[in-house]
Length: 483
Image (cartoon, rainbow, N blue to C red; front, side):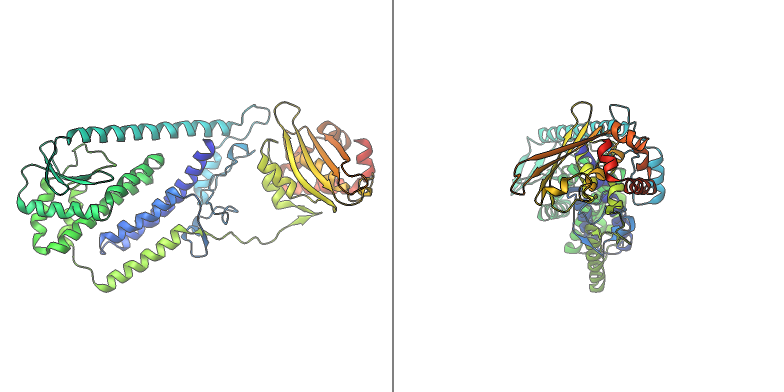
């Protein structure tokens, strides 16, 4: 569940930046029909539901691109291995925010049974699930209460029902949506109301709004998502109002506004995520929009569509990966990859695999996976190889096998809690087919050879280069004979 929570958190952060872009775009489109603003919220929905995306140089998210995280299909502001990092780091895309957050994150405690960051994430996961469950329960309960209120409604015609148990008209239902109207409406009021609610049905708003509320429940911890939901609902209603005015003419603006005001349900208690009520909130803004609405010109429609197309592409695409100035290699070691994957815990399979892939492999050997011994101390790592060339490479002092010695010592430096590194080799060359060779390096043995704890060399790249230089300066037989 913690992994799922981190995925949701990354999607929510990404959607926040997209929501800010949409809010700015709404200002640019304030004179355009509200249907364009309403369509734009679909980009936020995509980001809230789909964790990955395609990459493009046109992505607007390049402005907040997490360092070395883009290009994988996921905008990873919070790393998935957050709980395993010695010094947890969040890249929020904005330096000031990142610095503030990172300064408050606790560093790992190597001797503790649990990393403090793991505990924090577990608590956050529990709070997230609890909040979502409460909101879901409230929404379902409220909706069931509403259904109980309208169960006695009488059919007027088609899908229109009338009841004295409600104060405002609304659309309700998922498979077969129905329009419910209160008793006592005049003929001219009914004409506006039915056209408005029928527009909701034609556009499938009765499905879109509950779906949007479900996304809000999942991302309830993000204040920007609450604001986005409110603005999306506002644009939804205003676009329906504009269609009514556009179809029935400007002469109905005054009476339509009066009807809207009289049926305002800002305190009606209707469920937030369901039905589509005629007099829903933002009545003042909606009336102002009705009175100032004008049929858009063709150039305004064209400009609006261009802005929408640019934003859809720019906000749904992830930025292309940052170009690395170089791929530094030192004595065959990929230093960037090694420093990126150093870890406190041998149980972090992804990090350990990353370390091994960044180290040189002797010619004639084929990697066959790793085994982690983490159930009880001493903790160990077994690296399996198949040898496809002559067994001469295994002779003590052979240059090709020297890599195994050096790699093992570096792993003991880079994996904080590992106690032993075992290299297991199966001879697959013919004469000795199936013969296995194993040699193990323990932390105690390596520290004795070098006269110090090798873990401090993993502090930074400069120190690690010093360790590599020191190993290269030692005769291979000295290491092998001592260990």
